[in-house]
Image 1 (tube, rainbow over the protein chains, first blue to last red):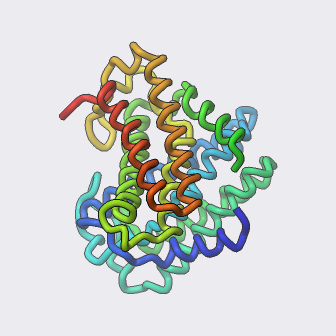
Image 2: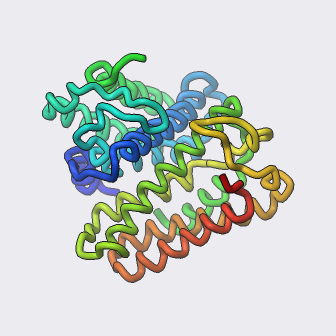
Length: 153
Length: 153
């Protein structure tokens, strides 16, 4: 995938505001998306940080592609009005500030998408040091969004 | 992605038996993966079956890529021994027959992966009739596995 297409997909995914089903569905689907990302980022962390001797290039590529595909899937559609209250798999942790600061939400979403797509690119190259560094950058974008828009339970 | 790489990834994903964390984590992650697939296949169905006037090529490509990336992510690792009992987001519906019929499980997994990757390819071409037909084939692979290995609740 070339960079221009990636950039367009990143923007399209980040700024999408189309709604997607009842509130509970949106919450459950986004909880599913992030949980699936957590599994895949955990696999990469295990193979490039915790147990680098277990590094398997194809597995890391598959995991990074999975994360990027989730990031590019238009998650913005799962943040419809009212989805700061409700129960998906469990009660949502989304703060209402998310809707009060749309520019900041968009900025963080674009940062997340960009980092995820870069991780997929770096995984293809197969340099463990670079993958580790980019995984760190991706995690930072997760934390930034959590700090701004996720309630602590 | 060329066909040879796709084929290798398909096989690698389908036959992986490495475990992935405690039983509850495996169940929750796979429930997340399939729920995320359901959201994306629902988007495609809406745009090529229910409301074809809403067809957006880039959105369908993103959704199909997301499904394929999940299929290629090595879901087999989330079917470790004992995961036919336990609670992820909710109690698992996996039948113990899954572990008694590994060849059939593998056959169904490969069929699912092949159909998902073909859907991603067809989505790129942008022919709505072809996408609709391939979505039907993908759904058949889901149903086959449910019929064999999923408990009805």
